[in-house]
Length: 307
Image 1 (cartoon, rainbow, N blue to C red):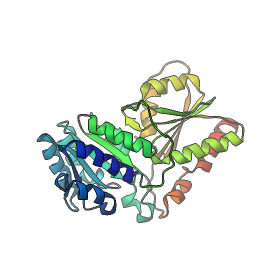
Image 2: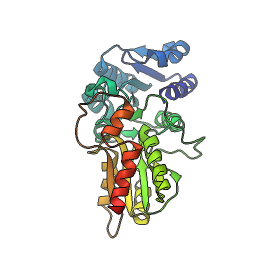
Image 3: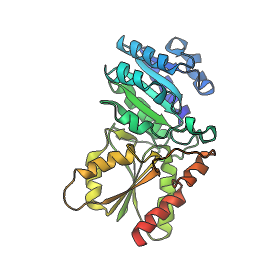
């Protein structure tokens, strides 16, 4: 995803000289093509994320369209006050990019696990929050936040994500995308964990259960219309996110469901169960340990339906 983001941003920045990319002394192997081609539209701020965000706000309020880039929690939690006070409050045209959402940097421990970022960024008024599920969505999200006036958050995986779409004909902020039709159960996924959600659906297909499947590249604004329609059509909604189940994607869906009257689907939230990971390991290993692997997701759905 990060390579796709950089490639897309290069295309955007070549056409718009007001685009400027700031990095917190990270991502040099990935960002090198950008700074070599657009040196006047790039600044390395150093390991000083609060300064990076303050500078981004100043540039944006001077007419620039600014992207900040770092890994894990560094461009969000480390500089939350600057995002809130300098960027979001002023509706500044700053696009905050995190590479390594969830357990991507699992081997580096809890300080590098981005598992509360969606909830925190979603709580900031007027901030758009996006988490693409594949490379095609990553490119579409990059263009969408560039075109959007105001502060945005883009949560990327790292690399190797499974390709979902060859193309997306009508991509819009705030709209989910259907991947599979189904019955009884519908699975909603956001971000790079889509491969586990898809794997779970395929495992259930082998057992005679055929869930519908949607990807949500936008967490805020959430696709309320689609959620309501699915709540009336299906018995069970399963939300899958590589994130704490408190306050994130699953909570955004639950907020919509809570406002509905009459009969509606029950929801199961798959994610990190309101804890910190004290385990060090690969992303795949940690997903399985915390119930987010395809096998664990499928088993959770099976147990709800038949146990």
